[in-house]
Length: 71
Image (cartoon, helix red, strand yellow):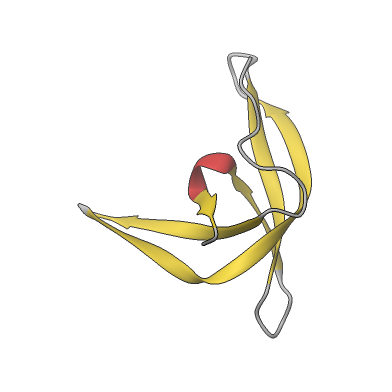
């Protein structure tokens, strides 16, 4: 069984993979919800709802492989 990489209230940043180099976003976010979704093969995939710490306090949902822990 896969396990979630992050917990509620963890600080994360979204990574951007472009070609070979890895650049990390500058805006941090806080995980507000963990969702379990099933793929075509019936395996569990974890998705996180994140509230970003920018001036608009926007929210988005992404898979766990998109995030890295904030420094």
